[in-house]
Amino acid sequence: MFVILFVTALTAYLAHELWWKRRNLPPGPCPVPVFGNLLSLNYPPPGYEAFEKWTENYGPVYTFWIGNTPHIMINTFDKLKETFVRDGDAYVDKKNPPMLQLFRGGEYGVMDTNGAKWREHRRFALTSLRDFGLGKNLMQEKILIEVQDVFRKFDENEGSETDVAIIFDNAIANVINQLLFGYRFDEAKQDEFVALKKIIDAPQDVFGKFHMFLAMNVPIFRKILPNAIFEQPDRQLANMCLDLWFAGLSTTTNTTTWAIGYILNKPKIQQKLHEEMDLVIGSDRIITTAEKNALPYMNAVINESQRCANLVPLNLQHATTRDIVLDGYHIPAGTGVVAQISTVMNDKQVFTDPEVFNPDRFIDENGKLRKVEELIPFSIGKRQCLGEGLARMELFLFLSNFFNRYQISPSFSGPPSLIKNSGTVIAPRVFSAIVRKRH
Ligand code: HEM
Ligand SMILES: *[C@@H]1O[C@H](CO)[C@@H](O)[C@H](O)[C@H]1NC(C)=O
Ligand SMILES: *[C@@H]1O[C@H](CO)[C@@H](O)[C@H](O)[C@H]1NC(C)=O
Image (cartoon, rainbow, N blue to C red; front, side):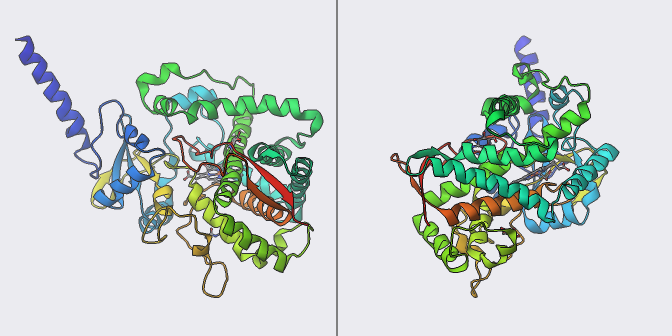
């Protein structure tokens, strides 16, 4: 009797998990109870290969289960244009795991809000960036102060092993902090920087770990998560600052250090960069954005670094704002949808040998920078990164000035490993290297 009951219950459960709950959704990999398809992202990390295989098997649209929640993945550039761009309003909401609100103390900020609150604060953030001088020289001046500071630190350590990421992280934090609070972390404020980093890195450290990534997304693991860190009276303001710090610091720092890591693994590329610098700049003077178009190879290196760094293997999760029909499937309002940009940037049809770091793919037959619209590290659609302008300016000014001034070579233990761990934003391995002035 008991056995029959058990077998019936088990059969019903499995039928529900494996068939019933999936019956109206686009086909996709079979979810495991509790975890959905998340475990596959760790074999191997950070999950690009699983996403690529599923796109091959199921096509540009398939269903991916995050825990118990289905997400419709959009995996090719054409399909993204058809959905996130041409029908943008239908894909604009965010679908947030409920624990996120616990962590923030409610629905605040810009990254995880929806509707009028999101629209208002997105506009506010963009206007503030513009007022602060983006598009004018003011922003550039602030960044160049940090470039000089980076120079000072590398000059002091010339010839000895130096932790590259720490220096850029401090400089990039200063840029964003100038913008949010009007001051930078100079020598006297290093303690404050360290304290603030601790707060900011707490979620990063926490959510960077695979078991925490699971805990975020699988309800029964939530108990191990830390409590809300935001007890401030003005939660909207606190969360807005958190968003800009969080979204703007690790992404920009990690892209910068990925670029240097790739170049340390390919000395020829540094040589070509130096040839371009010697031809176009010819001294150790400061490079400004006015010279951006004169340095196509430098730009190609930045483009390829962003493509290969491919920082978010699983992009932020959106939700449909209304019922939609996609490839004949009726998708109800509130369903998870993801612009799968990491798969697009690894698309073999567009980027031959996508696993190879090859800046020349962005140079055309006349030696000019080639525009490749499938390069979408800042995502696409109405939620596209609002810091793109700032990030591009920082990447160009930090990297071009760095490579104009220095020759960098691997530490005694060799060039940094390029192997990726799993996580939300994929940080490179921490590494040190040796810099020498070129002029
Ligand atoms: C190389 C650097 C950066 C990369 C690769 C990057 C990438 C991204 C991506 C992929 C998204 C998700 C878009 C989506 O939901 O589909 C995003 C959103 C966002 N980014 Fe960035 N980002 C960078 C730098 C920055 C900077 C410097 C800032 C701030 C000043 C910033 C602020 C934001 C914000 C606030 C959002 C949420 C926008 C919204 O939900 O409306 N990012 N970014
Ligand atoms: C990645 O970003 C984090 C957060 O800003 C930073 O602490 C870390 O040093 C960065 N790692 C590398 C290698 O760039
Ligand atoms: C490549 O990088 C340059 C800036 O360094 C940027 O202006 C350009 O838009 C990038 N290309 C693509 C396709 O994103």
